[in-house]
Image 1 (cartoon, rainbow, N blue to C red):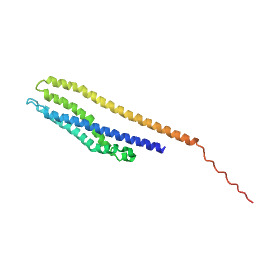
Image 2 (tube, rainbow, N blue to C red; image 1 turned 120 degrees about the horizontal axis):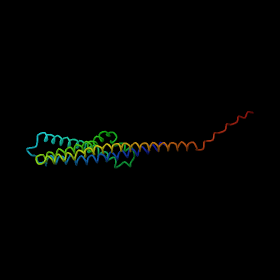
Image 3 (cartoon, rainbow, N blue to C red; image 1 turned 30 degrees about the horizontal axis):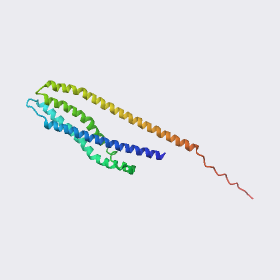
Image 4 (cartoon, rainbow, N blue to C red; image 1 turned 30 degrees about the vertical axis):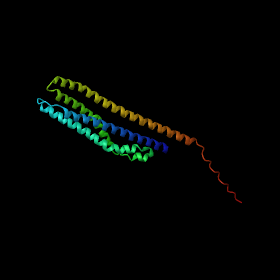
Length: 213
């Protein structure tokens, strides 16, 4: 039973290690792409003199927040990922090497990077597109800018709905996997208990008769 528990714990630790590694890689790639697009949009856009001051302020503030959020997520990924990669490449040497990885201790930082990159960062990127359309088409066609904003509203709603649905499905999957693992351990424990009960017992030695002369 102890060997089974240790094997299950080892599999769970390795699984968390590779899951964390995948999250950090996805966060770094997504943050690098979106922050790069935002920076290029801010540099390459051609501004007109007739654009309202409030619209320019909104564009500059939104672009700065977007880049800051993604750069923060990218910084966390770049700082933690090399340590996890180094452990993941030699995890076959034993469970103790895997436990030396900082993915458990820095779990909160990794989740923050994941949420900033894929959740908050994506919403900010969609809002950036809407403001960019207004800045670009304000002097040419306000109707085009308004149409772009109208299109982005249902897109944001669908994105939020999908994020909530995906999170609930992921939590439910984790719960089902944990419940299944508990049932398997319970079955193994019952089987070991049954085998121990049916094993032949050690014969008790008969008492030596006390022969008195």
